[in-house]
Figure (cartoon, one colour):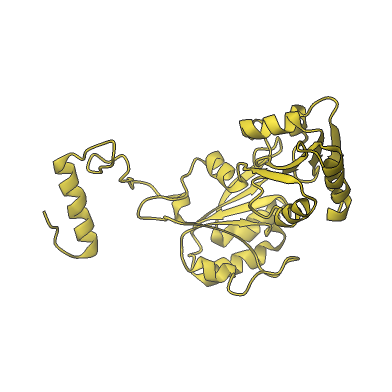
Length: 277
């Protein structure tokens, strides 16, 4: 194996080719072999590949069908760009490939990508962590599918937190998703977003509620490539972050005394105590 042999795992983002990072575009442009899944990655990303690059569609290949390409990289000293939808860290089946590449002595590197849950938040113009409303985002999928969920990881249990949740890979069982969200404690009028093929030319993004999620999915006949966002932050208004408040201080900015005192008073009132000077 030569020192040039390397496999890059590249996050392609949610779909739109111009949502690739600069690093992702450069890696694809320099690769000798570009592996992509036509079922998950938009073909426009291939515009970054060299005209003489070998393009391989992995949508119909198991990992055993891709392994010979990694062996060639090790033997011939070439580079491979394996393109993954969204960010490779989320449901990307990357870990098993990293293990295979390292067993072959290949250098590997991961290029992060824009995840579909952040793309959908951008499309609907919402922040997912709104002060005093939601300060956590839960990324999960419905249990009971093809891939078993670890013990203790159930949508119903996560829903009890009442914060923002992004549900992947669950549209085919929207009725069960809705039932679990309600059983976990989300009120039926909790805001929700159903997003199909976010940032693709045929994207469909619909606002609804937890109580109407199943009906919305079935109305539009969705069962794959669909993400759900739920939580009160999707409709919250009127809250203010401390980050840009004149009473907040950090290394580069001093707080205004009167505004700082007001922040302390508000914090004390929420805690039911008395503010200290």
